[in-house]
Length: 283
Image 1 (cartoon, helix red, strand yellow):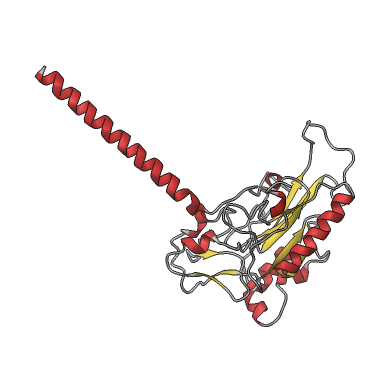
Image 2 (cartoon, rainbow, N blue to C red):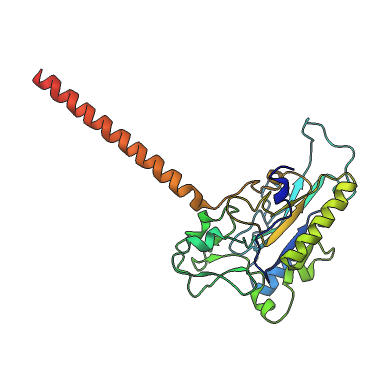
C-alpha cells in the first residue's frame, strides 16, 4: 500500500466540524442551490447575458455568487472521439455545484491582517463584514479562488455555510433546496464515511469516481482536508479544481531564499564589474 492510498478518505477535520458533501453524480444542474443561496443571503442577481463560453450564465463563484453550478460538456474523450456510451447520470455533461471549501487549514484566514476571517464553533470559515477592511489579502491566499472583493462595498465576501441558520439548528439553504440530495449537510466525519461508501458503490459499477477534499486529493499541501468536499467522476482539472492545492505560505521560504540568492549573485556581479572597471582605468 503506497503512502497516497493511506490518505484517501482521511481528513484532519476537527471534532464537531460541519460541512457539505456534494455528489456530482446526483446533480442535475437545476441551480436550485444558487437561487436558495441568493434568496436567503439577499445577494443581488448576476448578469444574465450570454458568456459565449458555456450554457451556464453565472460563470464562477464571486462576491455575490456563493454557490455556482458549473456545466461541463464532454464533447470528446482523451483520444478526441465523441463518447457514444456514458453512465446514465452523465449524458454528455458533468455538473458541479461549487462552493467555498471551508478548509481545515484556511489560507484566507491566515492571510487576513485584521482578524476579520474567523473559524466558527461549527469549524466553518466566515468573513466578519464589520471587521473586513477590503485589503484583498485573502483573495490570492485562497488556492481555490473563492473570496472576492465586492464592487458595491469593497469588502471580501464568500459562503458562510449559512452560519445564521446553523445557530438556529437549521440546514443551510442550498442543501435544503437541493431536490436530488446532491448537496448533503452534516458532521464532516460522517459525510466522509458516506462519501467513501458512495465511491465504492460507483466504482463497483465501473464509474471512475473519487473523493475530492481528503488529504490525497484536493486537501493537500498543508490544507489538511476540505470541510466542503466532492465526489467527482473525472480528474479535478476537468472541473477547474486544482488536484494538489497547497497553502501559499509554504512558498514563502523558497521564494525568500530564491530572492536572497538572486540578490547575492547580483551583488557579486556588481562588485566584479566595478573591480574590472577600476582595473581597466588604472591599467
